[in-house]
Image (tube, rainbow, N blue to C red; front, side):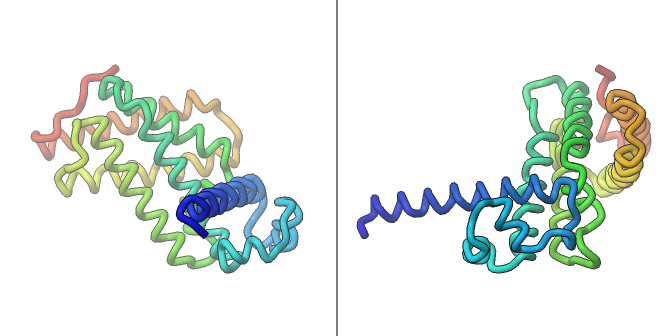
Length: 208
């Protein structure tokens, strides 16, 4: 097999793998991990079960790949619109976060709660996405991802509140997303003001 043929095979494999992950994201969007068997997954994907094992080794490997893909999507949505003014970018970041949670509820719950039981790998993914979201907020608020420890701790506390509020909101289905967004934006404003009191090097951005 020449290099061109190898490249074509690799590209097709990547496309197939991406298709299987996309199918899994739809299946796990509103269905728990334990409720789906590999036979169920293969049937919905329209492939032989062995193909899923070929790409992901196990149901757990498939599940982790879906979680990682979901995390990448969440971070991408939250960190978009980098050309906007800082205050407006923070606003858009929170809205993108809520929009993702609203339309990918099962995946969001998995990311935030740490997965099935005490799943250390999913928890590691969750911790990584938290750090990335804090860095995104910091960049939107201060123009840099590098912030003092106290500022990071304050934003981490705010993000924990965001996760709790979002989980309860998803269960209650109300109030509207816009209202929840404004609540979280105002909570963040108070957090940023408090950070400025303790860390004058991190001035709170002007309201949009």
